[in-house]
Length: 367
Image 1 (cartoon, rainbow, N blue to C red):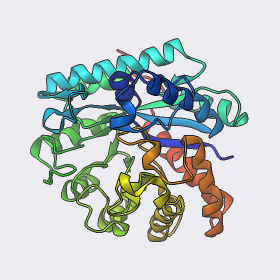
Image 2: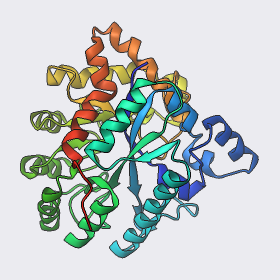
Image 3: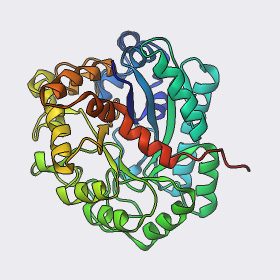
Image 4: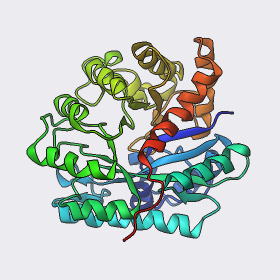
Protein backbone atom coordinates (compact mmCIF):
# COMPACT_ATOMS: atom_id res chain seq x y z
CA UNK A 1 0.00 0.00 0.00
CA UNK A 2 1.18 3.51 -0.85
CA UNK A 3 0.31 6.67 1.08
CA UNK A 4 -2.12 8.77 -0.96
CA UNK A 5 -2.69 12.51 -1.01
CA UNK A 6 -5.84 13.45 -2.96
CA UNK A 7 -5.68 17.03 -4.18
CA UNK A 8 -9.40 17.73 -4.64
CA UNK A 9 -12.57 16.69 -2.81
CA UNK A 10 -15.76 18.75 -2.38
CA UNK A 11 -16.52 17.47 1.11
CA UNK A 12 -18.22 20.51 2.65
CA UNK A 13 -20.36 21.05 -0.44
CA UNK A 14 -21.70 17.50 -0.08
CA UNK A 15 -22.13 17.80 3.68
CA UNK A 16 -24.27 20.93 3.33
CA UNK A 17 -26.07 19.99 0.11
CA UNK A 18 -26.93 16.35 0.83
CA UNK A 19 -26.14 15.84 4.51
CA UNK A 20 -23.45 13.28 3.72
CA UNK A 21 -21.59 12.11 6.83
CA UNK A 22 -18.06 11.23 5.77
CA UNK A 23 -17.21 9.84 9.18
CA UNK A 24 -19.31 6.84 8.10
CA UNK A 25 -18.64 3.93 5.74
CA UNK A 26 -19.28 4.75 2.06
CA UNK A 27 -21.59 1.75 1.69
CA UNK A 28 -23.57 2.79 4.77
CA UNK A 29 -23.97 6.28 3.29
CA UNK A 30 -25.29 4.75 0.07
CA UNK A 31 -27.75 2.52 1.95
CA UNK A 32 -29.01 5.44 4.03
CA UNK A 33 -29.55 7.58 0.94
CA UNK A 34 -31.54 4.81 -0.72
CA UNK A 35 -33.65 4.29 2.38
CA UNK A 36 -34.41 7.99 2.78
CA UNK A 37 -34.92 8.47 -0.98
CA UNK A 38 -32.29 11.21 -0.99
CA UNK A 39 -31.76 13.15 -4.19
CA UNK A 40 -28.00 12.73 -3.81
CA UNK A 41 -27.56 9.51 -5.84
CA UNK A 42 -29.76 10.87 -8.63
CA UNK A 43 -27.99 14.20 -9.07
CA UNK A 44 -24.50 13.33 -7.77
CA UNK A 45 -24.19 9.56 -8.00
CA UNK A 46 -23.40 7.14 -5.18
CA UNK A 47 -20.67 8.38 -2.87
CA UNK A 48 -17.10 7.22 -3.38
CA UNK A 49 -15.97 8.43 0.03
CA UNK A 50 -16.18 7.37 3.66
CA UNK A 51 -13.72 7.36 6.54
CA UNK A 52 -13.18 3.56 6.60
CA UNK A 53 -12.39 3.70 2.87
CA UNK A 54 -9.86 6.49 3.44
CA UNK A 55 -8.13 4.21 5.96
CA UNK A 56 -8.33 1.12 3.72
CA UNK A 57 -6.95 3.12 0.82
CA UNK A 58 -4.04 4.68 2.71
CA UNK A 59 -5.34 8.22 2.21
CA UNK A 60 -3.18 10.45 4.40
CA UNK A 61 -4.66 13.81 3.39
CA UNK A 62 -7.02 15.54 0.98
CA UNK A 63 -7.30 19.09 -0.28
CA UNK A 64 -10.78 19.88 1.00
CA UNK A 65 -12.59 22.55 -0.96
CA UNK A 66 -14.67 25.59 -0.27
CA UNK A 67 -16.92 25.81 -3.32
CA UNK A 68 -20.11 27.47 -4.48
CA UNK A 69 -21.39 28.09 -7.99
CA UNK A 70 -22.73 31.32 -9.49
CA UNK A 71 -26.51 31.35 -9.67
CA UNK A 72 -26.39 31.27 -13.48
CA UNK A 73 -24.94 27.74 -13.16
CA UNK A 74 -27.51 26.50 -10.64
CA UNK A 75 -27.96 22.74 -11.04
CA UNK A 76 -31.63 22.58 -10.09
CA UNK A 77 -34.05 23.16 -7.24
CA UNK A 78 -31.87 20.96 -4.99
CA UNK A 79 -28.83 23.21 -5.54
CA UNK A 80 -28.80 25.71 -2.67
CA UNK A 81 -25.11 26.62 -2.61
CA UNK A 82 -25.24 29.27 -5.32
CA UNK A 83 -24.50 32.97 -5.11
CA UNK A 84 -25.36 36.15 -6.98
CA UNK A 85 -22.88 38.49 -5.24
CA UNK A 86 -19.46 38.19 -3.59
CA UNK A 87 -21.15 38.80 -0.24
CA UNK A 88 -23.40 35.77 -0.78
CA UNK A 89 -20.35 33.73 -1.82
CA UNK A 90 -18.60 34.69 1.43
CA UNK A 91 -21.58 33.51 3.48
CA UNK A 92 -21.66 30.16 1.68
CA UNK A 93 -17.92 29.64 2.08
CA UNK A 94 -18.17 30.61 5.73
CA UNK A 95 -20.84 27.92 6.23
CA UNK A 96 -18.55 25.37 4.59
CA UNK A 97 -15.62 26.42 6.77
CA UNK A 98 -17.87 25.96 9.79
CA UNK A 99 -18.75 22.48 8.52
CA UNK A 100 -15.05 21.56 8.38
CA UNK A 101 -14.50 23.00 11.83
CA UNK A 102 -17.33 20.89 13.26
CA UNK A 103 -15.98 17.83 11.48
CA UNK A 104 -12.50 18.10 13.02
CA UNK A 105 -13.72 19.20 16.45
CA UNK A 106 -16.35 16.47 16.79
CA UNK A 107 -14.28 13.70 15.16
CA UNK A 108 -10.59 14.39 15.88
CA UNK A 109 -9.83 10.68 15.53
CA UNK A 110 -11.07 10.77 11.91
CA UNK A 111 -10.32 14.23 10.49
CA UNK A 112 -7.66 16.83 11.22
CA UNK A 113 -7.20 20.33 9.77
CA UNK A 114 -3.60 20.92 8.69
CA UNK A 115 -2.44 24.53 8.40
CA UNK A 116 1.30 24.53 9.24
CA UNK A 117 4.41 22.69 8.12
CA UNK A 118 5.11 21.39 11.61
CA UNK A 119 1.57 20.00 11.96
CA UNK A 120 1.91 18.37 8.55
CA UNK A 121 5.19 16.68 9.45
CA UNK A 122 3.75 15.26 12.67
CA UNK A 123 0.62 14.06 10.85
CA UNK A 124 2.61 12.44 8.02
CA UNK A 125 4.88 10.56 10.42
CA UNK A 126 1.98 9.38 12.60
CA UNK A 127 -0.11 8.10 9.70
CA UNK A 128 2.55 6.59 7.45
CA UNK A 129 4.12 4.63 10.30
CA UNK A 130 0.83 2.71 10.67
CA UNK A 131 -0.59 2.90 7.16
CA UNK A 132 -3.80 0.91 6.84
CA UNK A 133 -4.59 1.21 10.54
CA UNK A 134 -7.12 3.64 12.02
CA UNK A 135 -5.95 7.21 11.47
CA UNK A 136 -7.28 10.75 11.01
CA UNK A 137 -7.36 12.14 7.47
CA UNK A 138 -5.62 15.48 7.10
CA UNK A 139 -7.58 18.32 5.50
CA UNK A 140 -5.84 21.17 3.65
CA UNK A 141 -8.26 23.96 2.71
CA UNK A 142 -8.57 24.93 -0.96
CA UNK A 143 -10.95 27.65 -2.18
CA UNK A 144 -12.25 26.85 -5.65
CA UNK A 145 -13.63 29.94 -7.35
CA UNK A 146 -12.37 33.03 -5.52
CA UNK A 147 -15.46 35.23 -5.81
CA UNK A 148 -15.68 35.46 -2.01
CA UNK A 149 -12.43 37.49 -1.97
CA UNK A 150 -13.16 41.20 -2.39
CA UNK A 151 -10.37 42.90 -0.43
CA UNK A 152 -6.91 42.09 0.98
CA UNK A 153 -8.56 41.96 4.41
CA UNK A 154 -10.81 39.14 3.22
CA UNK A 155 -7.76 37.24 1.98
CA UNK A 156 -5.98 37.75 5.30
CA UNK A 157 -9.05 36.55 7.19
CA UNK A 158 -9.29 33.37 5.14
CA UNK A 159 -5.59 32.72 5.58
CA UNK A 160 -5.95 32.98 9.36
CA UNK A 161 -8.83 30.49 9.12
CA UNK A 162 -6.53 28.01 7.42
CA UNK A 163 -6.92 28.61 3.67
CA UNK A 164 -3.71 27.56 1.92
CA UNK A 165 -4.65 27.11 -1.78
CA UNK A 166 -6.76 29.37 -3.98
CA UNK A 167 -8.21 28.86 -7.45
CA UNK A 168 -9.45 32.05 -9.16
CA UNK A 169 -11.94 30.28 -11.42
CA UNK A 170 -14.59 27.62 -11.81
CA UNK A 171 -16.84 29.15 -14.40
CA UNK A 172 -15.75 32.61 -15.48
CA UNK A 173 -15.22 35.02 -12.61
CA UNK A 174 -14.39 38.69 -12.30
CA UNK A 175 -10.77 37.53 -12.12
CA UNK A 176 -10.49 35.52 -15.34
CA UNK A 177 -12.20 33.22 -17.79
CA UNK A 178 -13.14 29.73 -16.64
CA UNK A 179 -14.70 26.48 -17.72
CA UNK A 180 -17.23 27.06 -20.48
CA UNK A 181 -16.75 30.83 -20.17
CA UNK A 182 -13.41 31.69 -21.78
CA UNK A 183 -11.50 34.88 -21.19
CA UNK A 184 -8.11 36.28 -20.13
CA UNK A 185 -6.96 37.59 -16.77
CA UNK A 186 -8.65 40.83 -15.78
CA UNK A 187 -7.14 43.71 -13.83
CA UNK A 188 -8.94 42.40 -10.73
CA UNK A 189 -7.39 39.00 -11.37
CA UNK A 190 -3.92 40.48 -11.59
CA UNK A 191 -4.55 42.34 -8.34
CA UNK A 192 -5.69 39.10 -6.69
CA UNK A 193 -2.41 37.40 -7.66
CA UNK A 194 -0.42 40.31 -6.21
CA UNK A 195 -2.40 40.08 -2.97
CA UNK A 196 -1.93 36.30 -2.77
CA UNK A 197 1.84 36.45 -3.14
CA UNK A 198 2.77 37.75 0.36
CA UNK A 199 0.80 34.86 1.87
CA UNK A 200 2.55 32.31 -0.38
CA UNK A 201 -0.81 30.74 -1.19
CA UNK A 202 -0.79 27.87 -3.64
CA UNK A 203 -2.29 29.03 -6.96
CA UNK A 204 -4.65 26.41 -8.43
CA UNK A 205 -5.02 26.94 -12.18
CA UNK A 206 -7.69 24.23 -12.57
CA UNK A 207 -10.69 25.67 -14.48
CA UNK A 208 -8.75 28.77 -15.62
CA UNK A 209 -9.02 29.47 -19.34
CA UNK A 210 -5.73 28.92 -21.17
CA UNK A 211 -4.68 32.59 -21.70
CA UNK A 212 -5.42 33.33 -18.04
CA UNK A 213 -3.57 30.23 -16.83
CA UNK A 214 -0.50 31.03 -18.92
CA UNK A 215 -0.37 34.62 -17.68
CA UNK A 216 -0.80 33.49 -14.08
CA UNK A 217 1.98 30.93 -14.44
CA UNK A 218 4.23 33.63 -15.88
CA UNK A 219 3.55 36.22 -13.19
CA UNK A 220 2.58 34.56 -9.91
CA UNK A 221 5.75 34.04 -7.84
CA UNK A 222 4.37 31.49 -5.37
CA UNK A 223 3.73 27.71 -5.63
CA UNK A 224 1.50 26.61 -8.52
CA UNK A 225 -0.63 23.55 -9.17
CA UNK A 226 -3.61 22.17 -11.05
CA UNK A 227 -5.41 20.26 -8.31
CA UNK A 228 -7.80 18.40 -10.63
CA UNK A 229 -7.35 18.54 -14.40
CA UNK A 230 -6.50 16.10 -17.18
CA UNK A 231 -4.26 16.53 -20.25
CA UNK A 232 -6.28 17.95 -23.10
CA UNK A 233 -3.92 16.27 -25.57
CA UNK A 234 -5.73 13.00 -24.86
CA UNK A 235 -9.20 14.59 -24.98
CA UNK A 236 -9.91 16.29 -28.29
CA UNK A 237 -12.80 18.71 -28.75
CA UNK A 238 -13.72 18.80 -25.07
CA UNK A 239 -13.81 22.57 -24.54
CA UNK A 240 -11.50 24.45 -22.19
CA UNK A 241 -11.79 22.30 -19.05
CA UNK A 242 -8.58 20.34 -19.62
CA UNK A 243 -4.96 21.48 -19.76
CA UNK A 244 -3.29 22.06 -23.10
CA UNK A 245 0.26 20.88 -23.68
CA UNK A 246 1.39 24.52 -23.53
CA UNK A 247 -0.08 24.97 -20.05
CA UNK A 248 1.32 21.64 -18.87
CA UNK A 249 4.84 22.50 -20.05
CA UNK A 250 4.71 25.86 -18.29
CA UNK A 251 3.42 24.17 -15.13
CA UNK A 252 6.38 21.77 -15.24
CA UNK A 253 8.80 24.67 -15.71
CA UNK A 254 7.35 26.19 -12.53
CA UNK A 255 7.79 22.84 -10.69
CA UNK A 256 4.02 22.52 -10.38
CA UNK A 257 1.92 19.36 -10.07
CA UNK A 258 -1.28 18.31 -11.86
CA UNK A 259 -3.86 16.00 -10.26
CA UNK A 260 -5.44 13.49 -12.64
CA UNK A 261 -9.24 13.13 -12.33
CA UNK A 262 -10.56 9.53 -12.63
CA UNK A 263 -13.93 10.65 -13.98
CA UNK A 264 -14.99 8.76 -17.10
CA UNK A 265 -16.16 11.87 -18.91
CA UNK A 266 -12.70 13.37 -18.32
CA UNK A 267 -10.98 10.16 -19.41
CA UNK A 268 -12.76 9.26 -22.64
CA UNK A 269 -14.09 11.96 -24.95
CA UNK A 270 -17.82 11.58 -25.50
CA UNK A 271 -18.43 9.15 -22.62
CA UNK A 272 -21.98 9.34 -21.25
CA UNK A 273 -23.54 7.65 -18.19
CA UNK A 274 -25.64 5.52 -20.54
CA UNK A 275 -22.37 3.94 -21.74
CA UNK A 276 -21.89 2.47 -18.26
CA UNK A 277 -18.86 2.55 -16.00
CA UNK A 278 -17.54 -0.69 -17.47
CA UNK A 279 -16.82 1.12 -20.73
CA UNK A 280 -13.77 2.76 -19.11
CA UNK A 281 -10.85 1.01 -17.43
CA UNK A 282 -8.44 2.26 -14.80
CA UNK A 283 -5.83 1.73 -17.50
CA UNK A 284 -7.04 5.03 -18.95
CA UNK A 285 -6.04 6.80 -15.72
CA UNK A 286 -2.61 5.17 -15.96
CA UNK A 287 -2.41 6.41 -19.56
CA UNK A 288 -3.19 9.98 -18.45
CA UNK A 289 -0.50 9.80 -15.76
CA UNK A 290 1.98 8.37 -18.28
CA UNK A 291 1.19 11.14 -20.77
CA UNK A 292 2.13 13.77 -18.20
CA UNK A 293 5.27 11.93 -17.13
CA UNK A 294 6.44 11.40 -20.70
CA UNK A 295 5.96 15.09 -21.46
CA UNK A 296 7.75 16.17 -18.27
CA UNK A 297 10.51 13.59 -18.67
CA UNK A 298 10.01 12.32 -15.13
CA UNK A 299 7.34 11.41 -12.54
CA UNK A 300 7.77 14.62 -10.55
CA UNK A 301 4.77 16.61 -11.75
CA UNK A 302 1.69 14.40 -11.52
CA UNK A 303 -0.56 13.15 -8.74
CA UNK A 304 -4.18 12.31 -8.01
CA UNK A 305 -6.89 14.97 -7.84
CA UNK A 306 -9.93 12.71 -7.72
CA UNK A 307 -12.68 15.35 -7.47
CA UNK A 308 -14.68 12.47 -5.98
CA UNK A 309 -18.29 13.34 -5.16
CA UNK A 310 -17.78 16.58 -7.08
CA UNK A 311 -20.80 16.20 -9.33
CA UNK A 312 -20.27 12.52 -10.08
CA UNK A 313 -20.21 9.25 -8.17
CA UNK A 314 -19.52 5.52 -8.27
CA UNK A 315 -21.49 5.09 -11.50
CA UNK A 316 -19.21 7.53 -13.33
CA UNK A 317 -15.69 6.24 -12.62
CA UNK A 318 -13.67 3.38 -14.13
CA UNK A 319 -14.90 -0.18 -13.82
CA UNK A 320 -12.36 -1.18 -11.17
CA UNK A 321 -13.25 1.68 -8.80
CA UNK A 322 -15.99 1.30 -6.20
CA UNK A 323 -14.57 3.68 -3.57
CA UNK A 324 -11.49 5.81 -3.02
CA UNK A 325 -9.73 2.76 -1.56
CA UNK A 326 -9.52 1.32 -5.08
CA UNK A 327 -7.09 4.00 -6.24
CA UNK A 328 -4.40 1.65 -4.92
CA UNK A 329 -5.22 -0.52 -7.95
CA UNK A 330 -3.30 1.98 -10.08
CA UNK A 331 0.01 0.73 -8.68
CA UNK A 332 0.36 -2.50 -10.68
CA UNK A 333 -0.84 -0.78 -13.84
CA UNK A 334 1.89 1.84 -13.53
CA UNK A 335 4.46 -0.76 -12.52
CA UNK A 336 3.67 -2.65 -15.74
CA UNK A 337 4.51 0.54 -17.65
CA UNK A 338 7.98 0.62 -16.11
CA UNK A 339 7.43 2.98 -13.18
CA UNK A 340 9.72 2.37 -10.21
CA UNK A 341 8.82 2.28 -6.53
CA UNK A 342 10.14 5.82 -6.13
CA UNK A 343 8.00 6.91 -9.10
CA UNK A 344 4.91 5.36 -7.54
CA UNK A 345 5.56 7.02 -4.19
CA UNK A 346 5.92 10.36 -6.00
CA UNK A 347 2.70 9.94 -7.99
CA UNK A 348 0.56 8.77 -5.08
CA UNK A 349 1.75 11.31 -2.51
CA UNK A 350 5.29 12.67 -2.56
CA UNK A 351 4.75 15.23 -5.34
CA UNK A 352 1.86 16.80 -3.43
CA UNK A 353 3.87 16.54 -0.21
CA UNK A 354 6.73 18.48 -1.81
CA UNK A 355 4.32 21.21 -2.89
CA UNK A 356 2.64 21.38 0.52
CA UNK A 357 5.98 21.87 2.22
CA UNK A 358 6.46 24.93 -0.01
CA UNK A 359 2.98 26.28 0.73
CA UNK A 360 2.49 25.65 4.46
CA UNK A 361 3.96 28.18 6.91
CA UNK A 362 6.09 26.94 9.76
CA UNK A 363 3.70 28.50 12.26
CA UNK A 364 0.12 29.76 12.04
CA UNK A 365 -0.19 33.55 11.67
CA UNK A 366 -1.16 35.47 14.79
CA UNK A 367 -4.32 37.60 14.80
